[in-house]
Each structure stands twice: as structure tokens, then as C-alpha cells.
Length: 237
Image (cartoon, rainbow, N blue to C red; front, side, top):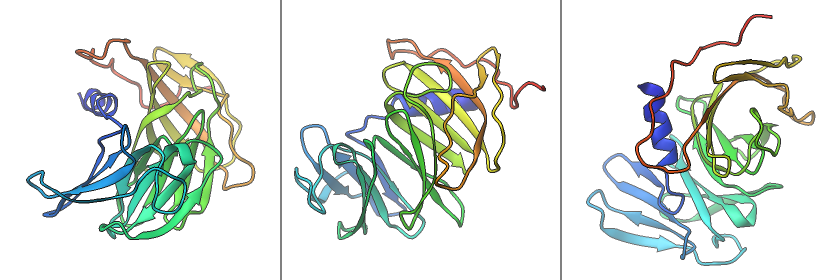
């Protein structure tokens, strides 16, 4: 049931309307389809303000597609078509931008006192510190198990677990990371894929992919089927 809820939450996420709530203060929403802005609302849903218009300068957007907030109430916005993440305070004051080498489709931020951000791109996931430093990357463009296409939504309940919604292959992946250099072995059992296809960037902190669970979604996003019982580890060698 837990896996089903996570899957439903990911595929139901509409990039043009992603909320970063603040306790007692309402939320912020990326409005990227038709507009290019971030909107601030009260708890009751009343519009307070918005900022941004279409463009490539700091504070402008070209399809803002996802938004998250850290424990210090700093906002991070995936400015998709500008290949960057922009950082703001909760009232829209620009702080900095992180330029990347691919489209920034989706964001998630881990809980806890030491937070990191995972950024879903096209065929690649970035792991970044809150200072904008790239801590690592993994992934390869494709539709095979263990490969990704456009990562429309991403979730990271902890630093080792990443859930990925692939838009064009209609697939939902669970990736478990190990933070050590290791050879990657390939296994397949049911919906589990311990895939060797992941590329670990040698220029950043190395980590290997221990397992990836893939679940193929129906092309009609109506009532989602329940997930099967997923194993929690890769098969032994």
C-alpha cells in the first residue's frame, strides 16, 4: 500500500501546479504551462503575489516545472527550459542560480537536518548540495530497465532511495544507491532490476546503484493497479 501511494502521488503530480507549503502560511506554486511564474497563496487558497515572467535572466523562467523548499524556508525552482535551478526566499527575492547541462524537469529534497536535492533531467539524475555543488550523477537516456527518459516527477524519502516517474516510457522506477565505488552487476527478478547500465560520473563523489525496481504503468492514467510485493534487496551473486 505504501508503494501504491507513492506511485499515485508521483503520476498525479502536474508540473504546472506543484506546491511547497509552509506551516501556517499557505504555499508556493510553479505556474509554468501558459505562464512563467511562481505564485504565493494563503492557506485558504487566496493569491497573495506572484513573481517571474518568460525569459532567461535571473528571476525569469521558461517553464518552471517543479518547486521544493528546505528546512530554512529557501525555495528551489526547476526552470526547465533554461537548464537551471533558481533559488529564492519565500517572498521571491532571487538568491542564486545553478546552471546544469540538461533540462531540469523535477526536484525533490530529502528530510532531516542535512538535506540534499535530487534533480530529474532527461536520462540523468543529479544529486546536489544546498550550496549548488554537484555531489554526483547517475543515469542514461533510454527506455530499458535502469535507463530513464524525461523524469517528470521524482521523490526522495531519504538520501539512498529515489523514486522516478518516466514520462514517455510510462514507467515508475525505484532506485537504491550505495555510496561507495563498486562494480555493478545485472540481475532481473520480477519487477526488480539490479542494472549495470547506470553511469556514475567520475568527476564527482562516486556512488553505485545497488538496485532499481521498475513498474510499467498503463498509458491510461485512470485507476492505477496495485503494486506487487517488491523485494527489498538484489538477488545474491
